[in-house]
Image (cartoon, rainbow, N blue to C red; front, top):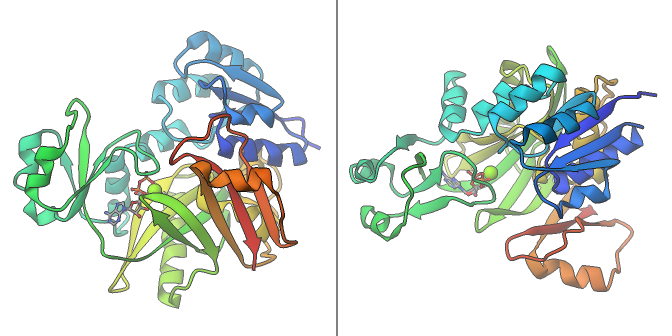
Length: 348
Ligand code: ADP
Ligand code: MG
């Protein structure tokens, strides 16, 4: 059995699930989070609380682990780079820097001849006034957005006058895709041309937050092949190590687009815990800790429903589950509107 000690930056539900998988593999975990109440402290072996740019805390953390990974992408590049000088950080810091910036990410994808939505960089308000061609669109901050935060739908030019935008940050304006469906692909890459790939997952969003995920996705064979091909090419090109998620749009004319890439385990892959022999979390731990790659086997179709805000309350009070239902409580102290509090996976 491995004696490796894994450090994880970020203490949310994804961190917790990585810790649970690591435990199964006899790997000790240390979580580094800037949140005193981080839920992952309930699941890890050690917890370091500090700001992500606190040099002393970074050294404390790095001294406790053999390899570092992360559960969210908004980590200062300098922090990852400094850590990487002392212990390997996987996926590489440069991958995180590329993907945490929406324009750099889309430029990279387009260079691979893979389609994204049309987009343009916006640095000042006056630039928005001439971009009729990109409307209806969505204006997004280039960095730090998640679960629809930092996003502004724009139907007509006048809409921008209602927005209170901070142009010290950069923005991207994306043309709105007329969505038929959204899917995601989760892939774990272990090394050159060595990866395990989960089947496409069909995702439904409400108010730009993921609501449910289901396998099998109802998609054509063409979209199936194309999405698998694009996700593998992206992970190969990044020389990625670990689990990666590619989010896709399918438009009403059956065109596939890459929406965004997550350099980490992903909410849409929670159903892999119950639906596969090896979950996205276990595969991530296996890849970053250089453990054996085991062929994936699907055990069942499945549907995952996110419990957002107070939707968790009835489940906490009265837990009556069927045999094919699995409830996960992220043990977050405070219930907040739009906050992901837990999920239910049903095997179908
Ligand atoms: P986040 O980083 O918050 O996940 P996304 O760019 O993935 O941001 O946007 C969240 C959701 O908003 C998408 O899954 C999709 O439902 C909707 N959305 C975002 N951009 C577009 C777009 N250009 N066209 C259509 N829908 C979009
Ligand atoms: Mg997204």
